[in-house]
Length: 61
Image (cartoon, rainbow, N blue to C red; front, side, top):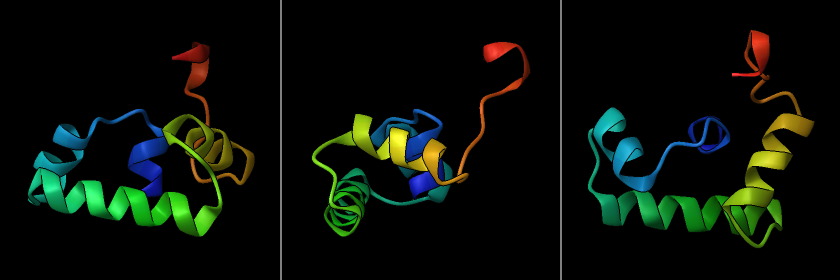
């Protein structure tokens, strides 16, 4: 879940990729944010990059 958040996926995109309902994804995202102690998705993305969960694509994409 954190990797998909770190890659900038929306709840709808995560739901489609993982074959889950959007409400389920929303619940999981909230739990990830709570466990990481971050207040929003932006901070989760920063956390993911800072901790090597995701890396910037070559060329900055």
